[in-house]
Image 1 (spheres, rainbow, N blue to C red):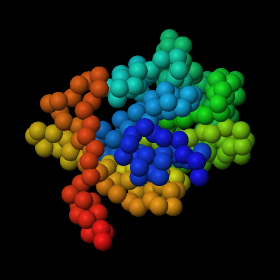
Image 2 (image 1 turned 180 degrees about the vertical axis):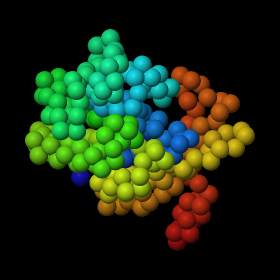
Image 3 (image 1 turned 90 degrees about the vertical axis):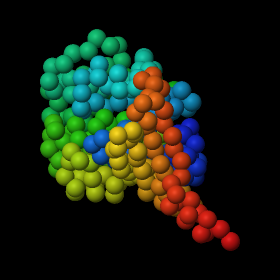
Image 4 (image 1 turned 180 degrees about the horizontal axis):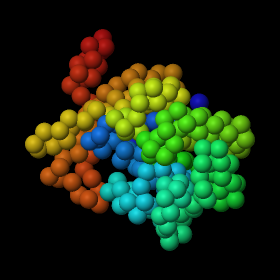
Length: 262
């Protein structure tokens, strides 16, 4: 089994080396979580380290706001990125950025064929090594546009389309970002079930900091064991260009590891 590193050491170690060919990674978090940053970091690393074509399917915000959020996550968007702007297409929000592509009149019936057209004409020709990483930003944004059940059908169809037509020639990895507080439980359950790799964040806010638990719950690695980490963004120490993120094993996991030692 071959892996592509995420270049986030903790994740690569847990995942058995990184992400497999055609992997589906879901990052699920709550309202106040910074867990979404991980998705942008992985996308940046795949572009810079693996020569991937990085694609954002935008369902949530005007592109200018995505650029600022990527920058906050230490990911400067440029011509090496591609944005398929479903949000802007739906609401007539135009962007002059050269890497943004729109879809005329996106509907549940026409969305996937129009997305595939952009892949055929723009994205796949750029993928010289056959590697593409697409970030779905975000699943709750899709739900706002199309409803929960229709979103499941669209995403199911999209995954099947790319697997059926391109899995032999291309390595297309998908990252889903989801704020679980904004969608019905059955959608979160469905997304978890289709994921090869699953990361879930739980946040806790106090006066000094936002402290989060990062639960790594799924990986196709035969040696995988679920594990929890502390994921911390200190409010009074954030550098808006490069947020301070600390990831360390929680006390409960340390105790579990010690208990397993002979």
